[in-house]
Image 1 (cartoon, rainbow, N blue to C red):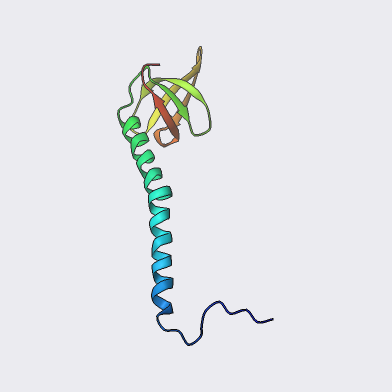
Image 2: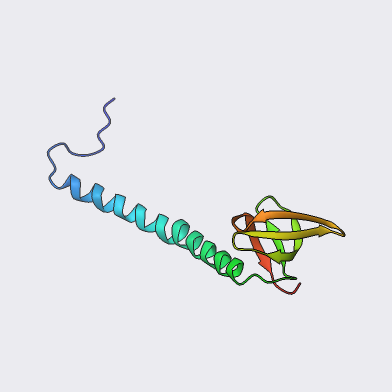
Amino acid sequence: MLFLLADPNAQGGGFESLFFLAAIFVVFYFFIIRPQSKRQKEIQDKVNALKKGDKVITTGGIIGTVASIEDTEVLIEVDKDVKIRLMKTAIGDVNPGK
């Protein structure tokens, strides 16, 4: 049994494969890369606008309220008299005023 996927004498096979790879890249860009970078930019904007009293969720899943903010660190109160110090990059989401 002989399987032929393409005619070996056909011309222009390189253009179709190049077009197919470009189409795959475009699909990945619009469905994966662009939405992820847009979401990351939104989170970064929220972290930059962070203020005392905002509720935050860390990338590790810890939920707390911002007690104080420094240049690169945030002090988060997770329970009464229980505070943890985190890097701003560890904040996964911000829910202001909640």
